[in-house]
Length: 124
Image 1 (cartoon, rainbow, N blue to C red):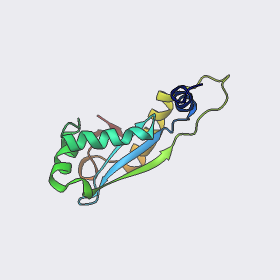
Image 2: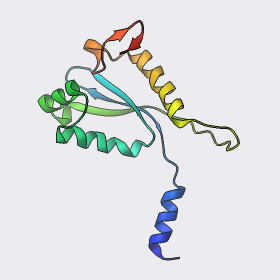
Image 3: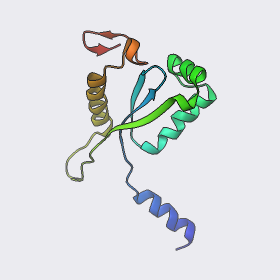
Image 4: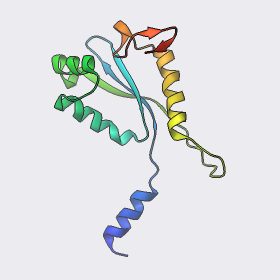
């Protein structure tokens, strides 16, 4: 097997690490929480902020005002993978439940975060 095919096979066999993380603004304490099916994609979110194209306008404005050095990226929890292949596993659903748990715990709304207003305990 040539080297390229070997590397492709190694890549396919690598387990991705999914979970919930946050961008925390050290200047004002606000946080933006989200989930990902691959923690390696966090650099893409950081690049969006650097390029000025992040969909959260308030987070984008603070990134521009305070600079990248004012933010820390913290993994809140890694999703435990289901190794039992005979049981159906909905990754997207499990990530949503994990993200909801952290949204409830940290409550990043209003002055505490970059998420929209909260109504009856749920984000809008």
